[in-house]
Figure 1 (tube, helix red, strand yellow):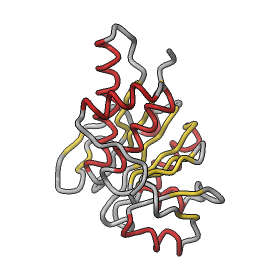
Figure 2 (figure 1 turned 90 degrees about the vertical axis):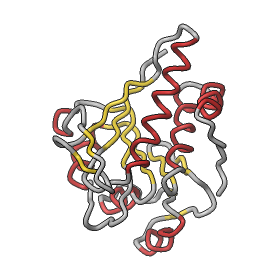
Figure 3 (figure 1 turned 30 degrees about the horizontal axis):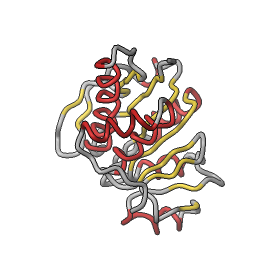
Length: 193
């Protein structure tokens, strides 16, 4: 099995669960594979500058700076409460060309939209912000928790990042592992809102 390299972008005032939810899903999938004597499917990196204080003050120490990342199979861009003040745009500019698949959780889609990375593709975001993203020119789906447009996968608010990451486990490994991971974390995995 090929190892999928996933970078979780950490930046000041990002939503903690947008970052930690996908992190836990990927680590749990790896743990379940190890129980079966199989190699890990995911290499999980927390990408960010020095120390990051996520929304609410929790401090995270990223494992690698954006400038030092050579290649990612998947980049996960979390959202933030204040999408104008807490912006990952500079890091996304650096990482997007080095990533095969871009993903976002919640309002992380706004960063991808501002940088022209969603043009012509269907996306989603937090239900409360669907209209704002649509008004900004994006083709927004408001009926799904995640939208897979190939090289772009977006998800709705907070816990939808977990649902999207389970989808990525199914996409990169198989549905059985995704279902086992959902069961292990006691999560009801649904696509529709």
